[in-house]
Length: 122
Image (cartoon, rainbow, N blue to C red; front, side):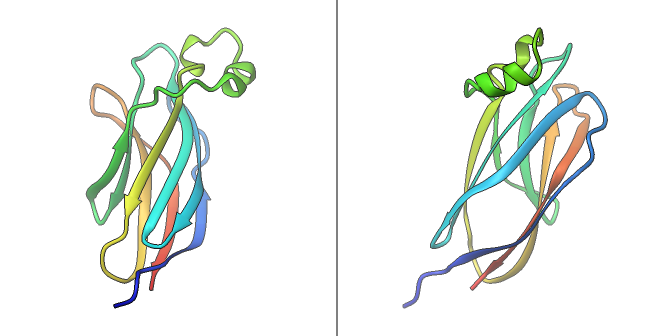
C-alpha cells in the first residue's frame, strides 16, 4: 500500500480589498499532509476566521491567535495585527487535482477571498 503525496501546483493570492488584511503560504507538505500558515485581521471588527474550502465544503479552519510581531510592525497602531497568525493542517483524501479556496469569514458572515491553492494528490 502506498502513501499519498501532496504536490503544490500553484498558489494565487487575491488582491487586497474589503476590510480584511491577510496573507498565507504553504508551510510544508509531507505525505498526505498539507500545512498552511498565514495572518489575517480586520480593522475595527472582530477577528475573522479563516476557512479552506474545496468544492464549496469547509475542509479546514482556524481563528487567528498566533502572535505575529512582524505583522504588527507592518501595521503600527492596529491592535488586531499582533494576534493575527494562524495555521491550518489538512489531510488529503483520494487523489487527483483540487482547488482549495482560502477565505476570511467575518462574524456577520461576510466573506473575503484571500486566494487559492491548487494541489495534486498522487
